[in-house]
Length: 317
Image (cartoon, rainbow, N blue to C red; front, side, top):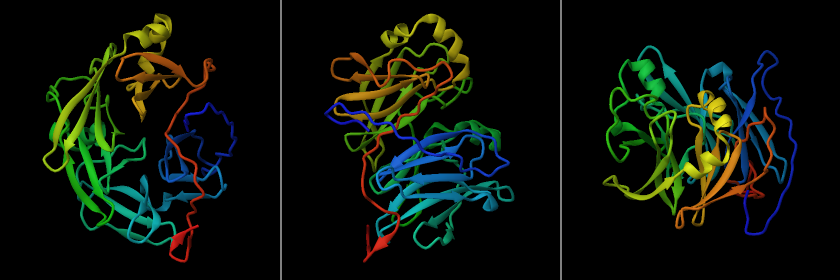
């Protein structure tokens, strides 16, 4: 969480929520409506939901369903929190969604299936009453044997009707069939209440700039390039020796986290945080200045609330 006044708070929580036979690390998956969301890196059927203010928590383990949590959101009509699960049907070779109500604990299958798997490492961007994920291009190619079409780079899910709304093309040039790590460096964030597409330089070893596009017309899918950020200064600031040792470990070593006014929070190599002023193009360090050799950081934008997963008189406590 970042505020106008400087503040720092350390909180320890027990993340040993996986089954005893699972020896895998947990990571911060996202934040929504005052809840922090954690998942396991390799055991993708567990979602840990926790409010750091009220200490309310819930562990959703879907292992028996073989479904992977891909979204935590507030359903506007029922006024309850729900979790969206993703499942690959081997018989049809298509993906399916299941919705789980955290109020009633009941689940319901979504009738429509789809061929484009949402990326599971972040909670989706919520805009225009819909959930938005980048499509997992690697998994798509693995399952279908063909490259993910650029016209289907982003998938949108309508929260009200609870159905796949559309797929959206990414802006800019179409990806060459021979491009290394196709679509891996593409990210989306919320910028000024609009969907922002973030395209890092596709060269795996030399990301020198980040291009930011805004979806100005959501219905017609009209993108406008808004900013181009040169990353040479922050790459040089961490030293060539470190860059050379760390790059092979990370497919997407530049993570764009969130917009704070005119500043974009950037997570570099999961170790260094920088705030980039998009108007001046300048950078400044954020967060802890010294991170342990084995330490990885996963920042998310978070707002503390007293919201509960339970209802009271039709409203959340």
